Image (cartoon, rainbow, N blue to C red; front, top):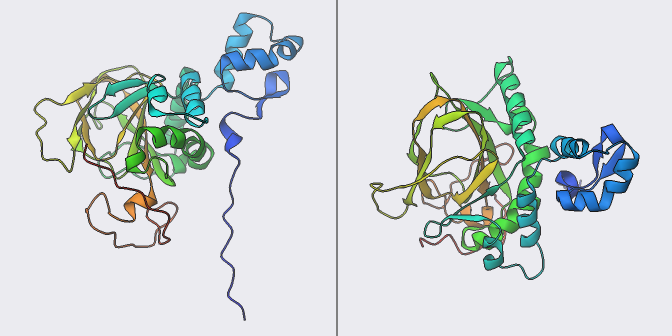
Length: 312
C-alpha cells in the first residue's frame, strides 16, 4: 500500500480585511482601502441607494472599517514596488530610533468599541477560558473567541508582514509565519501592572483598545541579551486604537494602573526561520515537542533561514 498523502492545508484569500465587504444597509459589496478611495469609487451608487448626508457616510465608515486608514496606507506602501525604510518611516511615528520602537493607528475607534463589547460578553460567559500567557491572569486568547483565523491571520499575512520586513529585516520581519494573539486586561482587584520581561516572539504588536483609565504606561529598556539597567527606561503612554511595534527581545513592562480598566490586544509575531535556529526563551537550539495549532512557532521543516536579530 502506498503512503497516505499529508492532509492539505486550506487557506483564505488575503482580501479578507479590505475587499468584497458587504454593506447590508445599502445592499452593496465594496472595496475599502481609505475614505478617499471609498468616496471616489462608490459615492454615486451609495447616494442612489440612500447614503446621502455626511452623517450617513460617516456612519457607514464607522460600521464597515476595521483597520485605520493610516495603517492601510502604511501597509500598502510597504508592499509596493520600490518601498524602502525611509519612505515607511514617513508614514508612522518613531517612538525611539535607538530602540527601534514605532507607533501608528491600527484599528478604528468603532472597531475597538465593538471588540471590547465582545470581549466582555465572553468574559462573563461560562465558556472555558485559558490564561493569555504565563504573566497575565486576566484576558482572552483570541482563538477562544473565534477571532484568531478571521482577524489576526490576515492582519499578519497581508498587512504586518510587509511593514515588519522593512522595519525589522534582521529579526525575521519578512518571514513571519505564525503568531500568538491575546487580549490582556488590567483593572482594580485584578492585574494592575506587569513586571519587566521580554516576549516569546521575534516581533510584537501591542494595540490599546481602551477603556477609560489612568496610569498603566508601558516602559522599555534594552534588548534582554544586553546587560543593562532600567534606571532610566523609556515610558510610552497608550493611545486607543494605536499600536506599538517593537522587537520581542526588548525588555518592557507596564506601570501600575491608576483608575479604570485597560485592555490591550497583543500579537506575538513569530518567524520559524529565526527561532528554529535558536529558541528566544532558553537561548539554545530548540528541543521540539509536538503541539497544537501554531504551537510556539517552531517547525520541524527547514524553511529558508535569515540572519538572526542583531543586538543594535
